[in-house]
Image (cartoon, rainbow, N blue to C red):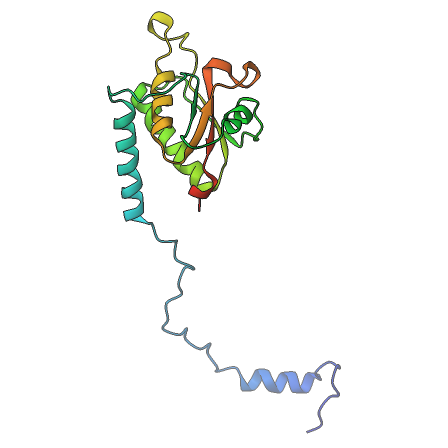
Length: 187
């Protein structure tokens, strides 16, 4: 039998011959195999999450305690041993504020827990400077700031907090606090 040169159409007599020979052929049965859906989801670090939750609960408990931490000025904190220049730069918003947390509308316990989570996440992400907006207390009973003192006590107890201060009015004034985190505390 003569073959057609490559690139040319198959002659009708060969196509007919092929169809005749294949008329009783049935498709092959599919293989007995399972097709997996794809990659598995990443594992959930259960123990790490439990540890973090326990730490956050402890921080929230400490922040609500009656024992007052000694803070020289209510509007600023500087970790002992650090130069006053750090606080001066922080007051002038020398470092870029990389993230912020607004606590308006939260109770004291909710605000303490949210702040502790926010700081832990900031450390994990390698953030250096944060702003926590606690409000001036204008919407609270007796128009007294409820969250201001509690949040600042919590911040002073955190080992990764180097300093915090009340920012200038353009950055929140007495209704906020700018926090400088230890860069070495991150990942």
